[in-house]
Image (cartoon, rainbow over all chains, first blue to last red; front, side, top):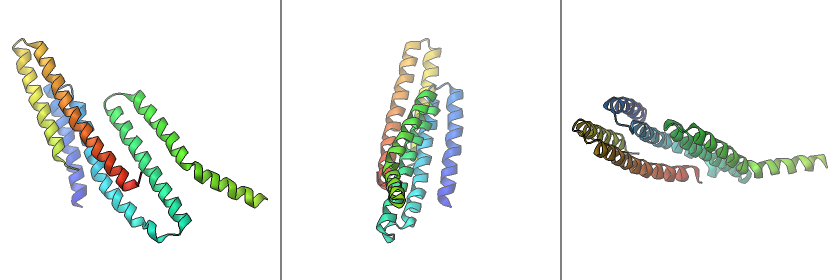
Length: 128
Length: 64
């Protein structure tokens, strides 16, 4: 609960400070928004880490472990590209943000390729 | 993640804004621009360090 309050507090303080800096005429006010974004993501990462540890990968069978680890990696890659894209969008570079998202999608597709191959081979084995 | 970074950046920004205002009113526009750029560079260096720490944490949590 204290984490939730801290996260909300950071967001509100950062929004207020950004408004103040913009009114004071500081041209780098958007950088404060980026710093707040990263701080809040860092606080959220603590919660995500607890969620990942709750999944209990070590107690599953080998194939299930492989699938769950792949899923966790995909979520992580999505997280990284999402944060990068948000920072770029915050700084006004929508083109770069879009390009980052596109690369992120390709990266996730690449990570999924072994799973697709497994499913395809399984399907082919049933057909034979 | 340290929330003091938000207050540090806000402090740097406010200081730079005040100094820029003073310099502009004193007629020293070039120096005002230099101070503004310096402030942005300082904040950017803080931002890059935070991004690096976040990426390290992400790699640790998701096993990348």
